[in-house]
Amino acid sequence: MSEIKLAIVIPCYNEQDVLPYTIEKLSFVIDDLVQKGIITKESFLFFVDDGSKDKTWEILAEANKHSNGKIKCLKFTSNFGNQSSILAGLESAKDLGADCAITIDADLQQDETKIIEFVQKFQQGAEIVCGIRKNRKTDSLFKKFASLMFYKLMNILGTKIPANHSEYRLVSRKALDILSKYQETNMFLRGLFFELGLKTDYVYYDEKIRQYGQSKFNTLSLARLAAKGITSFSFRPLRFIFFVGFAFAFVSFLIVIAGILHLIFLKRPLVPGLELFEIFESFFAGLQILCIGIIGEYVGQILQEVKARPRYVKDIELH
Ligand code: UDP
Ligand code: MG
Figure 1 (cartoon, protein in one colour):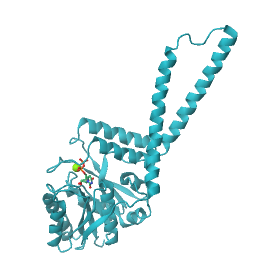
Figure 2: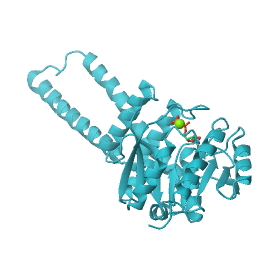
Figure 3: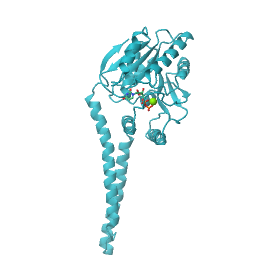
Figure 4: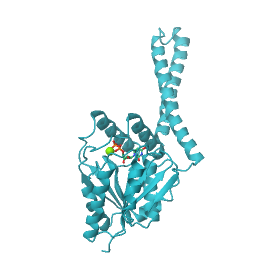
C-alpha cells in the first residue's frame, strides 16, 4: 500500500506547560512512522491555538520556525471552544491535502503510541477509527457517573455514539469531504461522524493522567457540551414533552368528568380536602418549567443556527 499523508490535529487552549512535551512526543511519532515507510515525509502536526492567553502561541510559532513544515499552526482571534478548534484543524488538514487526520488532545492523556494502530486500521479500509478508553481511572466519581448517564441518554434518544469515545479519532479524506457539507454552527463532532454511515473501526487505549497544566473543562462546560450534543442530534425530548403533556391532560380530563358526575349523583365533591391538589399543582408547575427549559434549549440552538455566525475566526496561520 502506498504511503499516507497524515495530519495530526491538536486543539490547544492555554497549554504552555504541556506543549514542549507534546511537540516532542508527537514529532517522534511522525518521524517514526515516516521511517517505517507508513506515512509520507509531507505528513505534519497541526496545532490550533484556541485564543490562549498564555505563551501557547509563542511556543507554537517558535516550533514552526525550526520544523521545515512538519509543525504547522493556526491561531484564533479568541476562544471559540474545543469543538471549533478541532474542526478548524480538520478543515485545514483537508485543504493541505492530508489523506487522513487524527485528532488528539494537547495534554496527550490519550496514548499517542497507539497512533500507528489508527493508521493501520485506515490502511485496512476504515474511514473512521475511534479511540475508546479502556479505563476511567483518571476521572472523578462524578465525572464517571455523568459520562455514563450522558452516553445512556444519547443512546435512548437515538444517537449511537460509542461509550468512552472522546475526541481521539482518525477520519479519512472522504469523511472530511462529507464533513465540509455540514454547515451548522454548533458541531458535535463525536455524534456527527457516526451519522455519516462510513466504515468504522476502533482502537482501545489507556487514558493517562494529565502530565502538565490543568483541565480546561469544568462541570458547567461539560453540561453545556452535553446539552449541545443532545439538542443537535435528537428531537425526542420535544416529542417526550408532547406525550407527557398529552397524557396528563387526558388524565385531568377524566378526573374533571368524574368530579362532575360525583357532584351530580352523589352530591359531594370527589376529593374532600385540597391538599392533594396542591401537591399535584406544585408538581405540575415544576414539570412545566422543566418542559419550557427543554424547549428553551432548542430555541437557543435554533437562534444560533439562524444567525449562522462563523464557527471560528482565524488570526494567523503558519505552514
Ligand atoms: N481545548 C480547546 N478549547 C477550549 C478548551 C479546551 O481547544 O476552550 C482543548 C485543550 O487544550 C485540550 C482539549 O481541548 O487539548 C481537551 O481539554 P482538556 O484536556 O482540558 O479536557 P479533559 O481531558 O480534562 O476533559
Ligand atoms: Mg485532558
